[in-house]
Length: 638
Image (cartoon, rainbow, N blue to C red):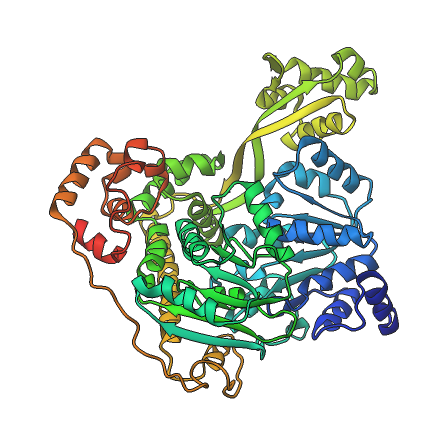
């Protein structure tokens, strides 16, 4: 293990810091000793340094898993500026850049490689990385591994097992939002000893937490009043939907402020230009969905306004954590309106598959042969369940012991030769050349691309699919072909015979219902926070298992007692709209036959079935009742 003096030297020479922040050295020393670790630090507390510095002191490659593309780009630019070799593999890279990164990995020229979690399901990537010395696997947003977490992602459940398959030497799990239950799940998944979980606490004394109850109609005027009454400073206004970002930004511009919207629906170049302008201070106010802020390293954000309720304590903690990273005072104000609960709850209800969809999908899975493969996209369309939810359902079937995942592959392999087959084969020995010749013979030619009949090659040669893929990867690596892989499919082994489908579906239905209720509870917790008769800072931290005395400067501590949150009257569903809906359902039964499908439609919640039918998706009735509780709509149409 590196000596403390050496660690301080590396910190100064490579990163320009004189001393470590709280918790950083403990994590680094644990990793250098060869043990797994978890870093549970508040947003902006320097989690990334734990793996960046460690990577420099380890012999092999450090792989960083992060769902945040903005974080990847930002960190890689900073690392390269410090002459530290780092790259990313993601879908935005062109063919030349992608190949350059692959070559750097093969030639052991990188210290850090950033990937999204989905990349670990990519057989092309796994073929590349298998056999490499992976000294460290850093898993960012590690709370996604826990079903108790606020952002559960099924692909995270595979990371622990894949890390063992790849013979990863040590793992670092990182998160800024972990309750005691989530922290325990993270430690259990990655075999982290309790003593190697480093939790520095979540209290940020420089953040002033305020709540201002208001009616929905008064919110924009109140926001403008607040911004006018305070000293200028970098500001993020968080909103719920993409259209809200546009509307609020326009209102602020009309009020004389320099503001811009930011959301995932914008073109990439406009979104990136907006972020860069904010980072440089040219645009002081960003009105954004939660797509903004992830991985944005700006230390002097003075104000965070929540125009709408956050979807839970975890999200709220993450979002306000972007303020005051320089240690100077910052204000985080929630413009609290109870009406927001409806849209947030509707999102949770809308994700839950109905019993019919669960039964139809599970029945299809159990009718498959023992070895089978499926397309998540096709399952999603066929059974009207969002792809993320299909993934979750299949993961639960694995955890229940009914399935075993056996990897992922591309159903279609296309290639474009850059030389004649004779010239290509002349570069190989007789045995390899014969195999490649068979590959070429089992390919059909179009104008430019040849398509390989993979099953034909398997039958003719007896070689497995991964051997065939490695052969084409080698051809690509040597510059003999241009390669395209498509038709992404998941391979499974069914491990139970004649299962009780009804009981399996009942268990799955209960799991999804439980998750739905957890999301509803998170929304309700934000309403409780907004009307709390106690210190807001202490109440927020208590949720994360931390106890502090009253902070002295939140709304409650400053002598501004909470007030009841205004609630708008509930609008009834028009009988003529119900008649129109029933008529539309008869025309498109696949998309609208069932009550939950109809409730999603009226609340403006897209599903695979509705998004694939233009007459349904574009109908004037779609989303007409988005401000009505989903449960009320569901009861009305049932």
